[in-house]
Amino acid sequence: SQKIEQNSEALNIQEGKTATLTCNYTNYSPAYLQWYRQDPGRGPVFLLLIRENEKEKRKERLKVTFDTTLKQSLFHITASQPADSATYLCALTTSGTYKYIFGTGTRLKVLA
Amino acid sequence: GAGVSQSPRYKVAKRGQDVALRCDPISGHVSLFWYQQALGQGPEFLTYFQNEAQLDKSGLPSDRFFAERPEGSVSTLKIQRTQQEDSAVYLCASSPKRIRGESYGYTFGSGTRLTVV
Image (cartoon, rainbow over the protein chains, first blue to last red):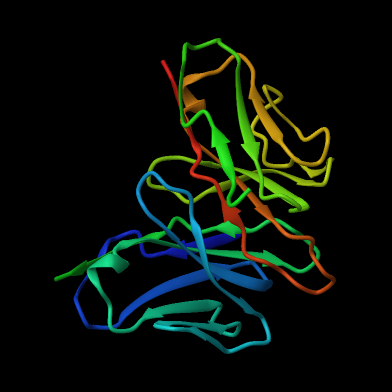
């Protein structure tokens, strides 16, 4: 069956370090993969989109990689700050469909 | 509007009651999605509209769930005869017109937290 897996355990890191979050998928051939940030009591906020033919995408302190052979995306936050503490969701869609399927999210806590 | 607006923000319903949840998408956004999010889980797809046409309702959990977008802007998600398992946050998202071969990030509202007692 199709599955999107994110580390369900919270990730705690020290301020200034690089946070790396993982998104693995099975039985999908995604055309696009997105990352979102979600704060408690709020809707997800779009961060980055990467296409299947792109290996890497950057935006300020954020970097996303997409390895269709490993069926994995990595999401990096460099020089992390306590304000980066939130839940991060990956979502993917396959070609020809409009809906994105979301993972369960990973909670990140950046310690001052 | 500046963002996606959902109302009410919180709704408590007695089991068996009907509820209606409203979504005002960003003006001009063609695509509108409804998702359901249980505590500690990711959003789960319910249904998708392109303008007023409901193109995908495969995620609606039962025939008690009904969504509409009659004029291609505001959408309403209706749940009839609510059950306790319907308790969740209901998120609405919109995105611009999809150009062939492209995909866009969604803009989500803050959601409606439904509690069925």
